[in-house]
Length: 145
View 1: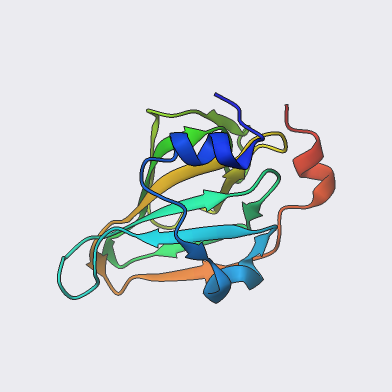
View 2 (view 1 turned 120 degrees about the vertical axis):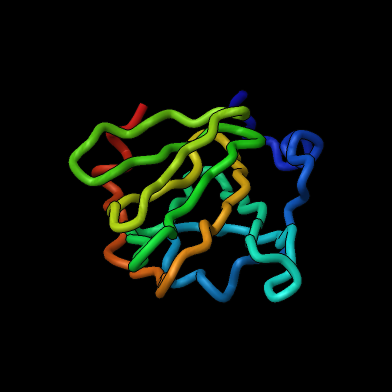
């Protein structure tokens, strides 16, 4: 369900807002927040709740891996978008799971009129890395429902 009110959204966002995502801010349009749910080195799978303010989205990017790898998005609150290069954007709502194979150029983020959270799961693999690319243009983003 769409939610513009931050306080109302906080009640829906059961995994918590976390801290401002300053480490990756250069790869986002708008403000995002990161709440790690597992600790690297203590768990073989890294999970984090990522929250996007209305209109926030990350840049196009690719999760590289020689073997395994990729990412899972588990949508938990608000409404957002996911898009793979060359395909139409997918509307995201709580309960949806998006499986992103390695080597697929994509982006994800909030709708312009809603906060949005998903749990990001880094799929373990061999020689994994993220390649951050260009921002999703304001023109392309504005065309989405």
